[in-house]
Image 1: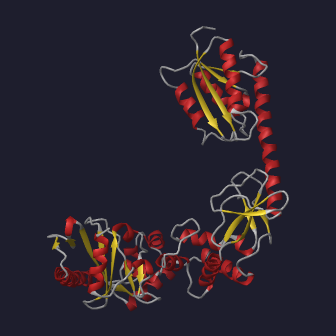
Image 2 (image 1 turned 90 degrees about the vertical axis):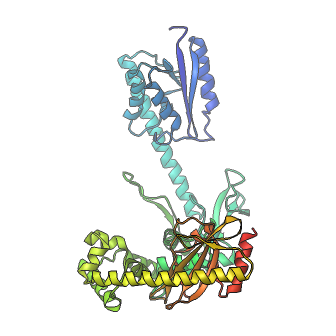
Image 3 (image 1 turned 180 degrees about the vertical axis):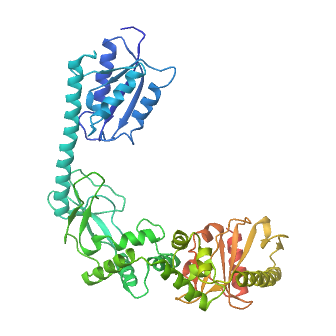
Length: 494
């Protein structure tokens, strides 16, 4: 072997608690390199990475990229043993990665294996046996770990994610002593188990409210998300509620007192683990069953093309100039549903009998009226600010008011749309023209404003897409000119 041969080391450890540590592997590899006059030029490391797949092993992927590079940065790859490639259930996978190195001119040496480096039939057989042993070890270890996790679930101990709204965690030691944990606080020792108990009363009340509101006639996930966002209510992670988070919450069996952990994966025979009645439930059984029945019916409710068109015809009879925004306010059916069935919402409306010429005339008139009302409201705002000593000038080509220090306030008007819940105003999240503040005017059916909201652009972008007749707290609505001036001054002084 040449004294100038360059070598690369590849080391992997599947977890922090594995006995075969990174340091142990590197010590053995360095000793081998010194004994065989090899210069160790690079080390590729995958710490705390599973050997069952390569997708999250950046060290191994980097090694394979470099070995195929020209010029190749090393001549030999040193590995502790065959299992460091991975404990792949398909034993050909490890053989493939070794073959990739050899095919590009880099020899692979397992420094702690008894067989040599020659490519004779006996060595090939021993490698195959070792790879099969590594795969079987991984399979048996997985079975044992899953059995232990199943046992923990049956005893009422949590496995997996953080608890949802309404629950908090307690750490339970071997003696049964309990101590509360913060949301992201870790266990004190490896032997402690985690149990879920009821959290603060306001969280428990919130969870019950969400289930009750959805179970009520007319309750929907979208409507719930809209109301919670409008009220400024946050999830356990401090984020606004969304349709996805509410849907997950309504399906979470922990609220009914059951732990469910794991999921059925493609190609795996073992189902999710579950234990019924191991947590103190937050939701009564009758309410839980009502919510699950409603979710099931809505999930599998499929309207025919004729039913979808009939729904549009009924809405067009009440409003011949129906638009997509009107449909969003009503909550009739998603635009995606009509696009999938008919190619586009416009095509579906045409089949339902909408007069496009009438719609265009109506839209043109709304633009003309909206422009005239917008000009008047802008003049009134400019006059109001001037009377209160705030220097302000209009932008020549947009509804932008330029106030002191050159800061820009966008005036945005919104007219009401009818919905089953009453009138609603669309909050259009425009990005242009650029402004630091937004003065949102909630208009009535005529030329007057029902209320105003003065917000920074960041706060405005976080608003829900629709505003009800009674503006929620996060809109911070005001109803007089003096309040508009006071709010603007407070924002300008920040």
